[in-house]
Length: 114
Length: 110
Image (cartoon, rainbow over all chains, first blue to last red; front, top):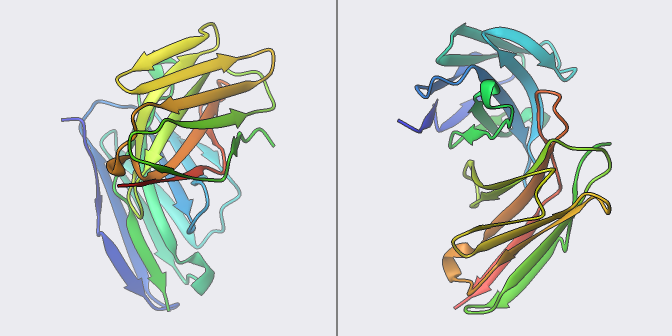
């Protein structure tokens, strides 16, 4: 299985809602990533988990809270978001043991904050 | 910033023509990767070239790397309408993450 899955595909939420994005991979990768992507822009790295530990946090606001329950799953908990947080959220995974950090991406969750 | 910079930002060609995209970067790298993204979808890894390699091929793709100039190029030969997408270069300076460039939007007309 060489796929990264993300749910939901689309999410509309109000600024007072709490929601979660989910990402799953079964390639045995031990590094997982969250990216945020605005239209016509490159992906912006948000968080990196390496061996289930948070290794990089790109100064992301605390209204975004990542969680890595096990080596196959990655969640992004959302709370009190702002309209400017509307974007495509991408999850990716890679195998750090290869040293190459070739990343496999999921299809993304299109988030709209009203 | 360690980000790569793609050139051109947009490229429009006819089917059958070759498409060339360039990427420049600022710091030393472990490897450089190219990704494709169809509109609103996830990125797909195309090809990886290591810092000690100069050229690599994969099907209709040819990538070159010049570490002395800190630049890379991606050539797509005999392009097809299905090649229409955004193409991003990404550099790996061995910090456990990739740095993506701004991307080139390629449009291939039938």
